[in-house]
Length: 109
Image (cartoon, rainbow, N blue to C red; front, side, top):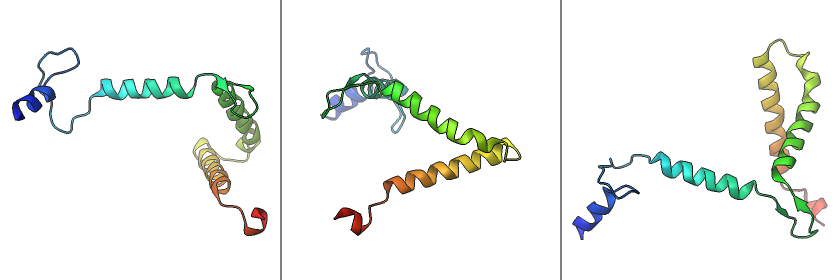
């Protein structure tokens, strides 16, 4: 059984013998998984309750464009690019935290 397990660990997808180090990352597998997830998550679909068509790439472009328009006015108030990026990251982090916070007890009733 140990010979079979070793044989399976030393063969690549084409079947050729290739010694693999334990703990090494097979970048072809990582690429295949990332490709699969991107294709699955960015494909057009339908909203489950309304039946409207959903275009995730279009939604992503519109939302990033809106955030860019909101923060374009703050560029002049910062001295350089690094301070603007720090400000932008801080504001976006705060917005993400506030959107993930649970509602108050009064709002739940």
